[in-house]
Length: 196
Image 1: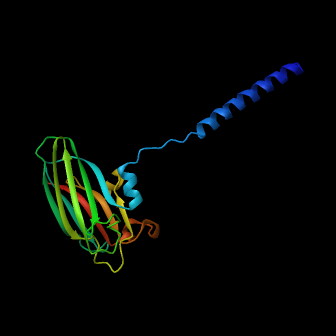
Image 2: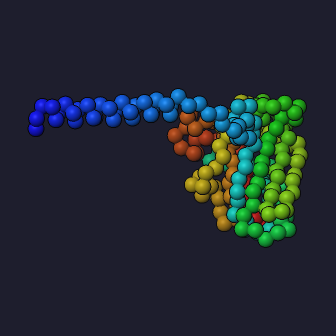
Image 3: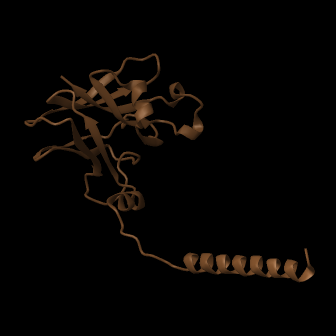
């Protein structure tokens, strides 16, 4: 290949590379303001608001709280709130919130507050219903505050769920970074949906 041909190829490659870099720089220099979501606000302020879409196994169900001190101790049911859906639907949305009783915008489940305001809002199709009540904060009997709140993923649901119950939240006395196995995270409180 003649020398002038090689130079031409090199010049073409350099021109293409420069063009690509310029295009990338133009793209990276563009700043776009995004819409803030409710999840963003909850994360900033540490608000305990959790939303789930749950398969409907029965029109009659309950949101149930349990606590367990150790892997060998009994599971205690601490609260139970009943719901009845008046529509046929394959699934429903369930919004759970735990807020401070003084109406401040801050974390409630990992605080040292003895009680929290709990609400459960259920929606399926055009039908909706809600429960709201002041309850003792889960694991409020501990000498130290809970260390972690973990919304359950589909895989994690399977660990504590049955045909008639689905685990939604786990509040643990120790954080995942402090433990190697789930059995080491006790004491724990869990929030379930149970179907009747």
